[in-house]
Length: 214
Image (cartoon, rainbow, N blue to C red; front, side, top):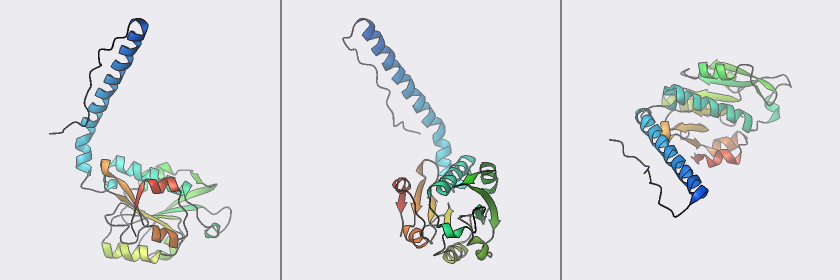
């Protein structure tokens, strides 16, 4: 049975008269109504959040939307060395490797999207195409076995390629950004050592939302 984290507190009987009393009662009743709505929302959401807790973030539509939003945020707020682009018309390349649950939502979100003035190109690569992967700015890695995952992220070490995934222990295996957990327990885990080696600069605001793994 779900236990509420909220308590609806009755409005105290204050000695206030006239117009001030009416305003006070209206404000208090509004707060009580908002509290009830928040409690109802938490109760309605909690079964789905518990169901998501055992899986990957990308297993649900909401989780995939969260990942896509963060990936777009990374694209706009990280700094890549200018020499990674072959010219002013070169695209900003986001590549997907492994399972392709994110291809459809990324395609919809990034249609005609620009990052730092560059048109985004979304591509799919496999873990046998690491030369292609090294020319991507972001590689989104789907589910694959630990050995293949470690080999893929190892092949991208020291290259200015941001690697992200919601695969368990991704940051420990050498990935840069891991979407750890799911539902209400989702958090970012950063491998700052790999980020530094790739010479990718990340804003302080993102570090405040994350846990570091080295």
